[in-house]
Amino acid sequence: MNSPQRSIHVVAAVITDARGRILLNRRTGNSDMAGLWEFPGGKREPGETSEQALVRELHEELGIEAEVGEWLMDVPQLYPDKRLRLEVRMVRSWKGTARGREGQAITWVTPDKLSRYSMPPADLPVVAALRQPDRYLVTPEPAECAETWFSCIEAAIHGGIRRIQLRTPSAADRQGLARSVAERYGKQADLLLNRDIDLARELGVGVHLGSEQLLSLQSRPLPESLPVAASCHDLAQLQAAQRLGCDFAVLGPVQATATHPGASPLGWEAFERLREQVSLPIYAIGGMGVADIDIARRHGALGVAAIRALWPAPRA
Image: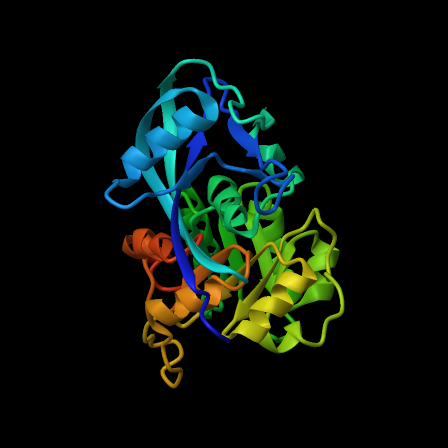
């Protein structure tokens, strides 16, 4: 693939009001991707800081004097004519009344309805970052004591984990273990069963597809009400996951890991080059821990996925 000629740094704002609604801007007929909704902002000009660029753009577009808040994430996105880096900042305080000063429509949207709006590819990972957990626990398979495994899952949930992939043995006790977890914790976290589509459908939980399953499936294997994810290691698998309508993917290994000692790590640069070619929310996996969430989001990830780093120590 030839590299696009232009590299553009855009700064966008997630503007939230007192009711928790988020402001979206509709692209006008004179712009690229006209008619799509986006987070307001614009190109950072030479000599500007990100804060200066965003304050200027929000004044020009919306007529407000914004107080730029914390950084949320960067989204690298490859388009046919450019390589874009979308830097996203939070804005919770401003002066003035927001209005479309350039003839564009604006609207205030509750976070749970953001997915109803058609948006450019670079904005979609931002929606995921606002609505989905930034860490994804992959359980080890249960050892001899299933109750210890259950207690660790419970401890993880109490510690703030809200998305869990259940790796259960291929033996006959898989169904019983998965059913017990679904009954105990199904209302407290997103549960995804590793690879077993039929059992996931029966239990009313999500499924996490193995990379070997992606290219053989022709359509999303579960209804929209149940999460579907996939393990990916290359661009073809990421594109297949996006085509199937997966809610998110896991990409790696980013760093060397004891779990897969023979796998060559991608590194962050290669991770970003893969991530920018799809709009799918992606967790980085492989040597990841909570301390890596920020660097993962610098490279466009939703967050991190891990086994050991997120798995609580068994109670003494």
